[in-house]
Length: 286
Image (tube, rainbow, N blue to C red):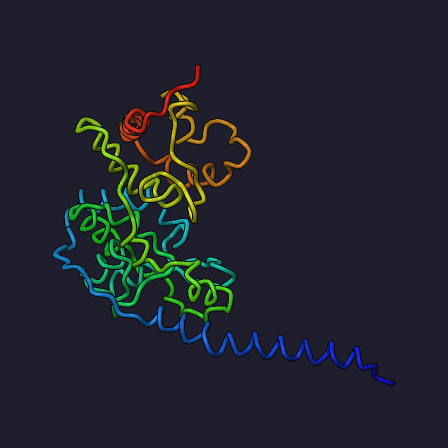
């Protein structure tokens, strides 16, 4: 077959582009992303000690349920498989790590997004869990320690180029970055602090640490004044109504986690969110 000069130039250009992309990967994406992944971060002092009382274990079990740990770690907390920027991520088996890590290591993983060696987690929602109190963290650790060991902790497979490229160019943030940049939900009065706290640990995974939504958050600003009255909010949290289009994730979360909030907790969140709307100047339609 006779090769035309145009075909030869096209092939040469394609080869040059391919080699350029390969050079970018080898020269920037891989070393830059690896430096981010390998960076060691200073850990805040962790004075938490696992609680031991049955009441603490029960409180920890409740917190694990309502803050949706099962979504990543599986219904029995024996680990789960997630996809993050095209890479497979294994959520740890909490029945194993709950017994092999120290209280301080577990606390730092939960509230600071840190691995035992000081590297950052990638998919642990510590920007939300940072709001847990010392007593809540101690109760969660107590519950994890109470679980019977099941299965093994799987080894994380290599991360893919898309995830690495997103890390290298700053489109994806590590958990320590998200924790450092997180802003708490707006204060709306001492009388609604309980609801503010519950919303911070349970809702900010999807709606942002300040509940304002925004880039990187699958949920919108958590404004309810124009959408829900108290009864409707209870139905939303229990998923007793038909989910609106685009709210399938909320429906799933309500079924797996939020439906385990008691009525007092749901009322506290509703009262806070209404007070937040007033503080932000959100007016009810009509």
